[in-house]
Image 1 (cartoon, rainbow, N blue to C red):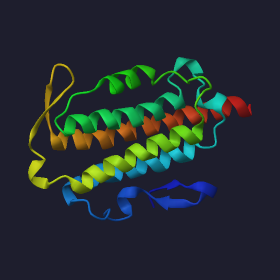
Image 2 (image 1 turned 180 degrees about the vertical axis):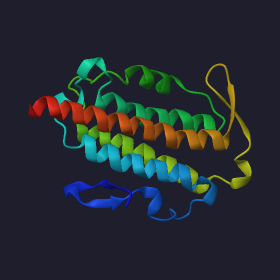
Image 3 (image 1 turned 45 degrees about the horizontal axis):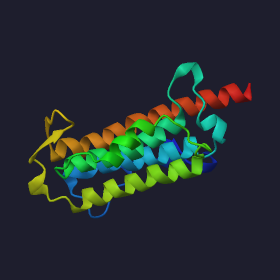
Image 4 (image 1 turned 90 degrees about the vertical axis):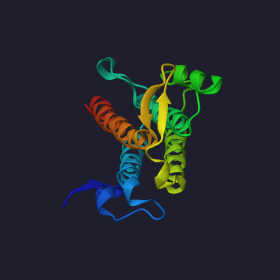
Length: 180
């Protein structure tokens, strides 16, 4: 059985094997499943970390804290593009702050909550996006690089999953260093 370890080590089916998410069109289920799976993974990997471990950068790689902030920020930015908008000053400033722990440094509970809230917002958008709009053109960034609503919504899921994988790996490395 394909699965992931949940809290307590119990095996749980991956999100895509748990059935369709209510209210989400079949065309958008893969993106929704990627988001749900990512949230399960980053929550399980990051939640047990101390604040120091959260911001550790073993071998100079990006910290778990960065990846959590980036998930929240990138979802916000990509949803803006999906709506046909441009980034505002707050979003640009948040992008620049993603690598900074803050003073005092943000802890795992706060960052996991931010990332989970962003995933929930993305799932809400998936529930309310008309299928007829999926092929509408959209531009990304200052250069307005071409994509579609579907391209952006799919990218939100796969991009979030990619960073969740980095969180899992970095958390394991940090924990291994701490445990000996």
